[in-house]
Image (cartoon, rainbow, N blue to C red; front, side, top):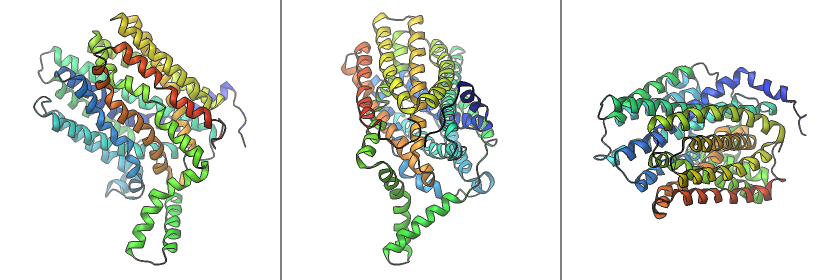
Length: 457
């Protein structure tokens, strides 16, 4: 049964819910680590004289995001000594991962990239694993802020999560770039290493903010999971350590997958997974090499911070909130079609910038257009997979869908630097190719658009 369509004023008022502010902070906590292993790491390696291919392949560390669903069931059940009792199950896991990220930044502050590249990338991998693990809990806690029967709030929650993620990523990038440039200008040789210590302070502040986020106290999830284990164990015909372990593995990993295919049917489920995998590949190829492109065109770190980070953040916030309203009124499916077409079109602006040379107004236009399309796309995408999630397997099933989406963006986009090198530095042609990459996902979505079992489409 479909919900009554909201008026514009009713849609806007959904954002006044205090839970939206909590979701905003959770998004920021999730987005900030990407500053460390994406733009900051890429620019650090670039300024140390490493090749585009090396920078691109270093992005393989993002691949862990594609597989975090494998340990999501463990995180759903295992409690952290001391932290879980003091902070709650979800918040305890988040704080533990934040501590690991903080110590990793301290280690980075002592590393010379040209002398210890393997160690540097290894620490980056630790940050990526901690961040990917943290995201499992952040997404579950975010979804659980909204009750299962509150359909009107889901798109708004998705929008706030996206705004929060981009706030953590964009503003974190502003802090990183301006701090690095400041330290460089005053003559500090290892200015990036010093910058990471400042970014560690940001991690500490986010942990303080986390203490203000309410964690719903419920045992329904654990009870239902144990019931599933007992059903599986009863079918095994005996009661011992081995059968209990088999029941645990089958129930926590196999259960969410079986539930997903049973709900949607095999062909539709495969179509959904194909769309999720392909949707943002073109954007990822562009994003992975964007800061390298800006540097090669001739923009300084300060200019990149102003146009790509500060201006981009403002644009993203405004149009993500508008995207949430659009998704509430038009539905997530229509929103994704609009965003996909816009994503393809805006990549052409980067091709124009590559062919025209350094142009601040064209740079600003390209960044604004790209952030608008990314805002709409991400809101629809997050709302889409959130609506597909079975609350019995919140962390595991969302992590599975999000991981599949991340797999396309990380594994394939890792070759972005090699593609630019293969094109002999022809950035214009590179951006044309990223434009075409959007099309396959929209074809998948077209074939399943009327058969997906979610709320408002």
